[in-house]
Image 1 (cartoon, rainbow, N blue to C red):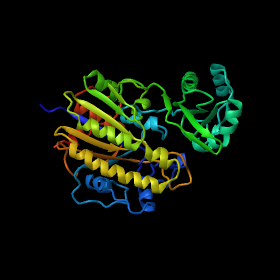
Image 2 (image 1 turned 135 degrees about the horizontal axis):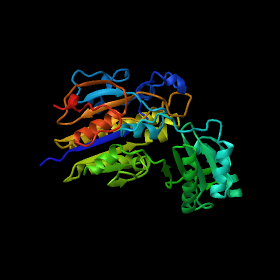
Image 3 (image 1 turned 90 degrees about the horizontal axis):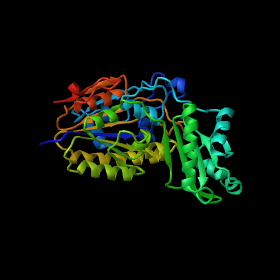
Image 4 (image 1 turned 30 degrees about the vertical axis):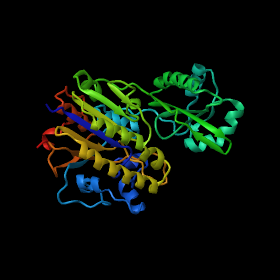
Length: 392
């Protein structure tokens, strides 16, 4: 007896063109995919092209194939914002109508005051910064003073960095847990522990990063599937994004290669129950988009394309593969922040029509509604299912 599965792969930040409201976010002209392909020579995305990536409206850097094997389209972010959380939450049926709070000019005095009271600590910096740059600039002062480094970005995030020889991982996690309570009062989306090690001139982030995310509203795709007996497996940073709620299995590996290896292992399993596998390839965003490294971004796309070809060969007859993104992060612009962009939508499987143009979907939530529909689960608060459009 066949068992239904959906594999949802998020190519983190692989946007496909500025949204109509991008000007409100300072992102007019952004097109992550096209601009990366223009800068990074020798990149071939044959599997994604075959699925129909170049057939998506607004994509100019890839050829439009005559007979794409998948369904293709693009999606608008209905939520306010352009960060990881709002993008992934919207895929799960949660539309964020009130944006999470950001601190573009630095943390407010009332936030700093409450954070200091809650943790019993003072902090260095307290303004937006590049994480790698700020530990190099203030790492020595941190070692001398013992004070953690506090910084933010264009996202709704509180980041606390500390050298592991000064503040242990357990202590840093405890500090961030208290910061999470404060962040909830100020409608801040994420608190991130950022441990590092090394010496002056050679400080390096370690693998101990920990994300503490605001609790997502319920019901959403994960909770609905879980309650309907569908196994929910999160790979990479997905469990962090949903505050570890609604999962049957968490595979919290780091980096594209580990996520690709783990997702491939999951797809190759012989499970006996329906399953939703939700994976995020983070390196496009974390290592290349935020660091304006178009060449590295292109190479990572090439590697992911090869891997997607392998995933396709492992699919069973009732599997549906969905490939998308959560926002843009154009490495060719002056900005190092996320960009407000359309995201791609590719759908493939033996039971999926070939060459169906899904057009421009009005919300990422259409993915969640479609997945819920496939598993005969309850409808979600937002989104329109495209299941009938894509099934053979």
